[in-house]
Each structure stands twice: as C-alpha cells, then as structure tokens.
Image (cartoon, rainbow, N blue to C red; front, side, top):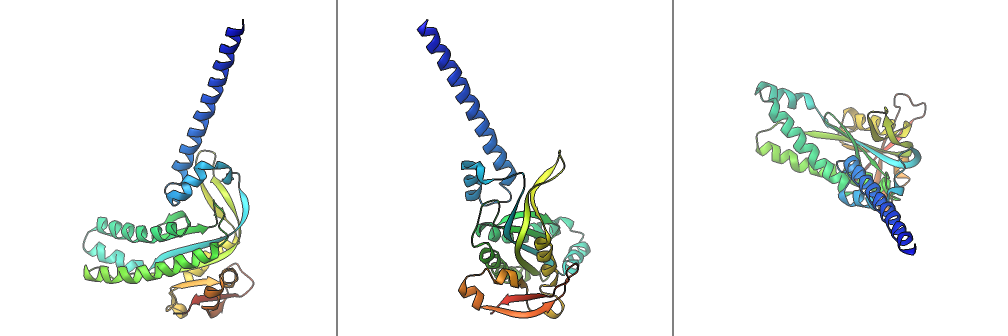
Amino acid sequence: DITWALLTFFIVGFHSTFNRFILEFRQKQQIKKQFEHYLDPRQVKALQKNPNLLKLGGERKQMSYLFMDIIGFTPISEFYKNKDDPEGLVVLVNEFLDEMTNIILANGGMVDKFMGDCIMAVFGAPLDMPNHAEMAVKSAIEIEAKTLELKQRYKDRGLPDINVGTGVNTGPAIIGNMGSSTRFDFSVIGDAVNLAARLEATAGRGDYSEYPTIYSSMTREELPPDMFHNSRKIGDIKVKGKEDVITIYSQSK
C-alpha cells in the first residue's frame, strides 16, 4: 500500500533527523561545557557552529604560549595571614586573575589552566590564529599596564604591592585532550611550552627586574613589523634543559 510506504518513509526520516538533532545538540553542549571557562564566547560559538575545527585526538601546531604569575606572592600571603583573613587573600587573587584572564580572552587566547597565582594561556588553538605571536605579546603588554593600574587601586585600599612576570614563547607543540580515560583536559605539551614557563620565571626578577614582560627570539620573528622593530634585546640566557642560549626581548617603552 502506497500510503503505508509513505508513512513508513516519513517516520524513518523523522526519526533519523531527530536523532541527528539530538547528537548535534549534545555535541554543542559538550563543547560549551569544556571550553566556556577557557575561551572567549565568540570562539565557543565558532566551535559549536563547526565542531570539525576541533581535533580532540591531538595535533601538532605552531602556537604561542603565555605564562604569567604574581611576583613576591609571599608578602601578600603574609599580609592576610597576619590579619587572619584567608578569604581576603582568595578574593584578591581571584580578582587579579580575573582581570588578566579578561585580557587574554579578549585577544583570542585560550586559558589552559590556573596554577595557584599563575595563568597558562595558549594562542592559536583550538581555533587557528595566524597572528598568535602578536596577540600573545599584546596580551603580555596589556597585563603589564593593567597591573600598574591595579597596584594603585590596591594601594588606595591599603593592600600590599603586587607585581607580575610574564613570559611568551612561540613554537610547535601537541594540543589535544590530555589525561586519563575518566578525567582529561584540552591542553598543550612540548618544549616550546616549557620554555615559555622558564621565561616567565625570569621576567621581572634579578637582572631582569625592570622587564616584567619577556619573550623569545622565536616569538619576535613572528611579530608584525611595528612590534618587531619596537622589540629590544635584553640578554642571552641559558635555561634548564636547554643546550642553546636563548635570546630574550622586551618591548621598548
């Protein structure tokens, strides 16, 4: 009977369409859940619109990496300890990191993770970003400026002084879901990432105390002409785990 044939065809088609809708909806919700705290909302929507941009299995990419942490955290911690106000310390750190996170997200970066008073961010993933080095250095410069603004605000509130060190490096790394079968994070691993962390540990300290932002020659090579020519060589350093000397730069004031 043609009627039953058409009805069956309609039911099967509807069921298939409904199942596809449910799968797509769940996929979009999963993407939102996994990335809403790490990416700018515009990037999350782009991933939801085209999940194929996301390669969860892991891939090797050229990216830029930013590490930032609070310098001299112990005096700040002692200040709140003496006041018996651990909650106040948490509020201050969260307030500060929130300001820095907003800068990173606004420049298209992905906040990979928070490690105490440190932020690790990636530029160029999960969405491609041809100017990832520029955006990473731009974020570091804006973090430096925002810190100066917050220092005055905290001083007016009678709070201790606060400073930051930010390191940026550019190079290849593996990005994808890292962890166990029961718990994993979308993250990056590689020597280029580790070097960014080493540069952060140098920035704003010791011989480089006047340079809160430091980036490598690899990052400098990928900067646009104006930033490239405005960069200033500040030294050559050896970092743990590296045989070669690393030339480091900061932006001219």
